[in-house]
Image (tube, rainbow, N blue to C red; front, side, top):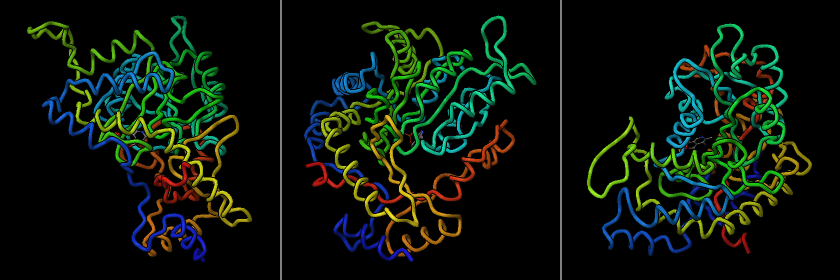
Length: 383
Ligand SMILES: Cc1ncc(COP(=O)(O)O)c(C=O)c1O
């Protein structure tokens, strides 16, 4: 049934071997920079590449500060702490995401509330959010948004830019402002994606990015926190064991975290950052090929939302139904081409199955239909 598709993908990648979903490409100065850290012995928690990487990402995104950490999950955990999420509170997020989004909420001792996604972004819907808040929440006299049924504080809203496609940020920023909700963007997958010309991860109080091996650029493992000057300074302090500056004394003024990114990983990041624009062009060119291939159906290619320039981190198609989704997955994986279903909804996982939920109709619809296709960068595509 999907013979033409497997042929098409093999033609793109020009190989008869196994085709992964997303493999890293090393085509720049990675070896030089990593070797430099080894020669200098600064492979660990301090070093010039960490500073260079932070400045590079801040400049690229237009964020006042960027604080590098050991992975995107740590960045999210810290991001939530930075906006004041604490024990026995709630955080609103989408059920259609990678588990790290919800786990970061749990690490704070808070609980997730699941609100539906939009069909055209696959990310948190501002309309569904407003409906849920109107029915279930109120802002008290002290300006705190609280769930009506138990008066628990709702301390953040955490949307995720699925597969690199930005959510409806203008409307989300507006709803969050009216309901006194700090906005933390999980931009793990969307580094380099633009919403109305502005980088994702820079719309909320905090934004976080992942540099895991499967992301558009990788540091091996890594993440970064985007924020303003004040929150950025606090992020640096908290992620580096809350140590007060001193030439040789150890004085830590609160319980901090050892979440910093090692210099070795930052070296890789500096080399990859130099290639990011080229990678985005290559990914957009591959997406355009897929889009043209799927015209006429039966699979619907998922295109970037209006007003957005997506990094197309992972290409996705929407099947007619779950039967077609199963058939596509079986046939392509059987032919040595890695394809994956979208995540099982967070609200179905044992640790989150009792969480508070709005109507999740669109998330459920997408869960039964979306499949990701091989999306590794093909470098000739950036020319
Ligand atoms: C949506 C989302 N959030 C968070 C993460 C966590 O990032 P990391 O794997 O770097 O911890 C990932 C990816 O891995 C992700 O896809």
